[in-house]
Every structure is written in structure tokens, then in C-alpha cells.
Length: 260
Length: 246
Image (cartoon, each protein chain N blue to C red):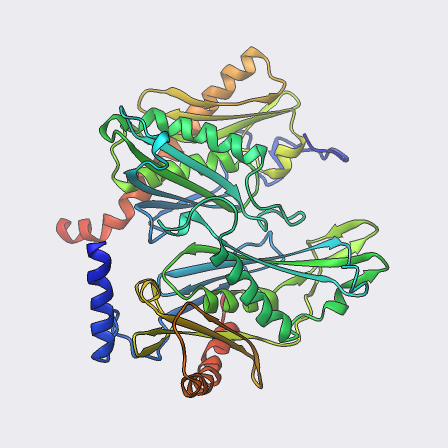
């Protein structure tokens, strides 16, 4: 507890003097690396590092049944797993509220951006493609939202599209690409006392009072999520929106430049 | 064993991936892949890609699991839902992964000096990111390196590999397709210093003589596997060592 108090004071004092623990500016991302296709067994995959945060996304497609209220659309199923391997503070067992929120926020950005046309995943009456996006956290050091969204966008935009031969799903050989109509990224900000930082690391997240994630494509905002008990003023949010549109250009470049 | 038409697994003495019967798949181990862990290892063994990470020792919780004489090991082996070329897998523990977690834990209960940490727990996580047969053996081989890298005292660095059987022929280190259609599968973990067998499983059919020969093959393969494990542990220090050698 003593150490926790000292670290919190240290982080807040640093920010008050305009500095961050790792020397970044308030609105800088950490070093980002994006590697695509590291899991060839998956239809699409991407391994993303934001500093010491590491997130792997695997995309799989399979044949399923449509939802009763959307009989002509495939299913998009996004889930996030905070592997206990990734941090001392993650535990085995059913998904925590944090893991569920992470999966749902990433899902919302992808879904509302129209990145995936679920109507194109229709096969025939009663039969559609299930598109699974699994967000696998391999090392935690803050900002899983942006790393997860970037990994998911990269994995989807590089995924192959299996085809059906009778009832058999063909996942290898000469296949086309999964149809992707848009690219979404997100920017997450942490408010710690009176200061706002982009891309909070693990220590900053441990002491943040509020968090906000903004997901956008080139033109419009697609999803937002505010978290924790602290608050943002409307002026602050407006400012963060501008920053998000500016920073997302940088993020999209990482997807374009992703290497195998 | 798998269903469907059985493919011919050995043609002119060569296996489908071109290997001889006693040949290992390419094996690569890297230490420190999980930054937060006390010790970790990433293994690529054939097309398997697996992370192993160790946390602890720390106070065992909940309190009723504590052993006043020694530390306990908690082990969780899990396959990612996107690890296979087949359908999306289910998340969460199943009967297979629960059993593998148990026998893996028992391997390390043998080599870790648990008496030095009464009341503590050590957590071992093995996450299979991509699977191509032999993941439990690869997981144990990686976990041994993760434990060694953690600095927690241990008596030896175990390795594991499986021997399978196709017709009358024994084959080392089966991949997924061989595993699906083989007549037997025998994964084994060994403590190389003593030669003790720490894990032994088998399903299918093997004669007494075949088991004996299989264990011989595994022991011999162990020399190569142990070498890769030791080199992985040395690698982070090589740069520093080179400086002092000059």
C-alpha cells in the first residue's frame, strides 16, 4: 500500500510539472509495432505492441446460424481475454467486467464503422458466416483499447476468406480476402488529477481518475466510451476529439505499413 | 485418432513433411517474451507457437490451498480459440486442457525446490497461440525454460517430446496430421540429469519392445532439445559475455 501511494504521488507530481515517467509528451503514443499474419492457422492475425503492452488478435470464420432478428446477416463476435499470463493482476476464471468492457468497446468501433458488411456474410437461408475476433492480451502495460482496436483492424484487413465446398469449410489454398469496407482506430486518454494524457501506460492507468476512448474512421466518429468515476468537461472532450482525428492518421499508417 | 480417409503418412521412408522417422521439427526458444512475468519463454516447434510464463513465488491464495511444508504450483494450459486451422475453438477450460494442466504441474513439482517456499504459490501459464500437434510436450519444454529463467531454484531443466507409431514404424515428434492418423501417441517428459521420466502418457497400441525403443528415441532427441533450452537461457547474456571475453 505504501508503494502504491508513493507511485501515485510520483505520477501526479510528474504530470503537474509537465512530464511523464517514460519521458513522453502528454499527447504522444509509445513506440508502436504492428506485425501481421503471425498465426497462419487463423484466417487473419496481428500482433501489436504499444511499448510493453502486447495484444494479439486472431480472426476466424466458421459456419453458423443467423440471429432470429437478422436472418440475412452473418454474425460478428468480438471477445477479449485478459490472459493471466499477461499480468500479475489478471486472474483465471470467467471474463472480468474489464475484459467484457474491452471486448465490447472494440466490437462497437468495428461494428459501427461498417468495416464488416454482415450482409455479405450471408450464405443461404438459415446459414451464415460467424466472424470471430479474439483479442488476446499477452502483456499488460496499459491502453488495451487502442492496441486491441489497431490489432483487430489489421487482422481483419489482412484476413483471408474461407469458402464452402458442400458442408466443408476450405481454409487453405487459393482463397480471396475477407471483404473490408472501412478502417477504424481508437484513441484513449486518461485524466489523472487535472492532466490528460494519450495512451496511458500501466502505472498511469493505475492512478487515472477517468478514461475516455474515441474510435473513428477518416471522416466521422464511430464509438466512444468513458470509464471510471472521474469526469471530463465538455470543452475537454471537444479538444480530445480534435486530437483523436489528428492522431488517428498516424495509427492508420501503422496498419498500412504492417509487416509479416 | 482422427476420422475420414487415412492418408499415407510415410512414403519411401520419408514423412509428409520430409522428415526421417527420428527427426525433430525445427525448434526455437526465446527467453523473456512476456515482459511482466518473473520468467518466460516463447517456443516455436514446427508450426506450434506457444508462450509460457511464470509468476511468483508469492503467498498462496486462497489460504486453504497453502501447504505449510512447501510451495504449491498452479498451472493453466490453454489453447487460443484461433490456434487451429479448423473451426473457432471454445474458450475456457475443458477436460483435455484440465488434464494437461495437471500432468504439466506434476512434472514441475518434481524438479522445483518447493520446500524452500512454504506457504507460497508459483503460477505457470502456458498459452498455445498456434497448434500443430505435440503442444503439451512443447509447452512443458518451454515452461522448463521459463522456470529456469525465473531464477526459482530447481534441480533440472526437463524436456518433453512424443513418439508415435505409424503401422510398424515409430516416429518422433508428431505433427497434427500424424497425430490424427497415427496408431499410437506417447508423450514423455524427462529430467535429463537423472534420466527420470516425469510425464508418461500413451494412447493407441504399442508392444513392450516399441515402448522401450520409443523411450530410447526420446532420450536421444532430448540431447538436441536440452541444447536448444540451454542456448535460449544463455542468449540474453551472450552480449555481456562477449564484452568480457575480448
